[in-house]
Image 1 (spheres, one colour):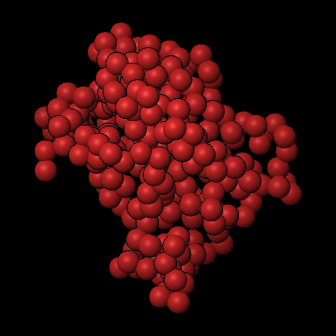
Image 2 (cartoon, rainbow, N blue to C red; image 1 turned 90 degrees about the vertical axis):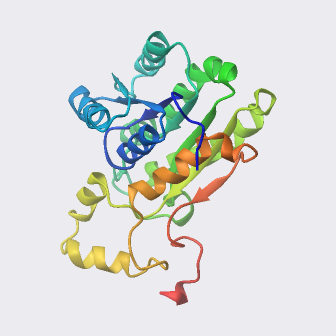
Length: 260
């Protein structure tokens, strides 16, 4: 299927690792130009180089997204380079384990900046360009907003906010034909997920326990599978889809536990 994304300029926050890297790679394979935004220029450039070596196009902007001024800078640099923005993928974040018992106010607020505030800021600064292009926004969110996880109050709250912002922006941006959707992630193997698994006394036992509860094929969702849905939602093939929270999770959140 031709998704009509040739030379479309798509910002991907956290686009150099894990799910973000998968999104950047699939976008480039569809002919789009992902603009990878992340704090580490070397990591960003590594993915840009891999994409260009495969015949695609990509660009990167080094920015610390917990700093509001750098969110603005990242959008400005994208516009300076290309003069347009056709889509935004809000993806950057980390499950940093800021819980209720051992958490504190400062760490909680820092986590919201790591995981939600830059979603708002990037969308705000990109909005004038998205109005011109009638572009699309896709927010990456996590099951923790619905299922909880334990010891991750800030991350769960941020993801609840991501889901709410998806619906709110879908309403607010109707007059501009800007579609806003979210892809909800459950269990997908990424470097951050691997780091989390390693915090358990028996990481392999914990991983096996999780995988055994994924209804479809008893396996984790790949970053590419998530990316495929994100890229579809950015394309005009999903031209009448907005305000949706779409679960790419092998049925993990909603199917009957008796199945596992």
